[in-house]
Image (cartoon, rainbow, N blue to C red; front, side):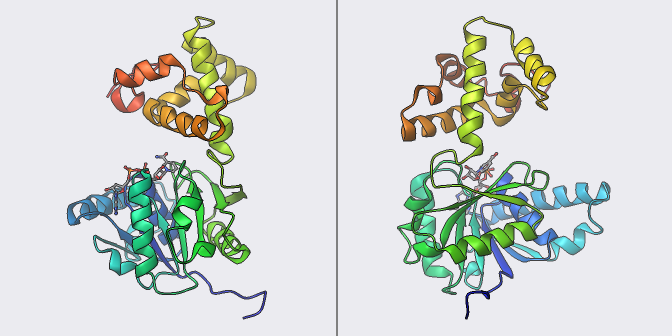
Length: 289
Ligand code: NAI
């Protein structure tokens, strides 16, 4: 193999078929990859398959794809991790818990046979290095961080660790591009690029609201009408989920120990109260459930 050729990714694996994993499997299959998705039980595999099917049927109804059935033919959803043995690239999108993810990376390292295979994580906040060092192939581990909803948002953050080799990053860039995504490269630091900038902005808006500076509506209208944001920061927090917003803020604060990342008391109280935003019907705004 010379410097200009490297093994092409053909067979893709996804672990976790929730919100993100289902989306990643969908976009990979829509780009003609052969996809195996692994869930934690047969019941969850069924639920995951239904999630992908529903999304593909919506895409077909909107004329975005010719045939949902053709795309589904390229996706197998199972509950057996061993089915990932022949994969060229695996993206992990399971629960955001460090112990669960490191256990999975140990298993993937044992199961995925090709020494060229890439083991990627969609984590938003766990250092890639912590996942890389439990494997025997840290050069082939990196973050491939998609955005929700995966079929719609074009950004992918590529996050090599200090140990990732350049070829792995380059092949991952080609993979992301082949999915119709626009990758950006960032270092293995909490929040990567987008959350490191977005979360302090949302927290500042919460502090502004908390201090009685302006109403939620006026803060949001200010940013929509005055800065051409598609939605204001408080509406955005409700969409992300206030629990998730707080969790990401905490991981940023933990990493950098800077005040701008510290979750304000109002955010903590709202999460304790179960006011989590859209998903519970109430956050900074109320929603019809
Ligand atoms: P989710 O809760 O919707 O899905 C997680 C899925 O993983 C569940 O279906 C669960 O059954 C499955 N699972 C858990 N442990 C497993 C295991 N050991 N083996 C196989 N499947 C397992 O979560 P979501 O939102 O899809 O998040 C997944 C990952 O993506 C997390 O690391 C999260 O930080 C990251 N992420 C989430 C974004 C979001 O907007 N929700 C955006 C970007 C990244």
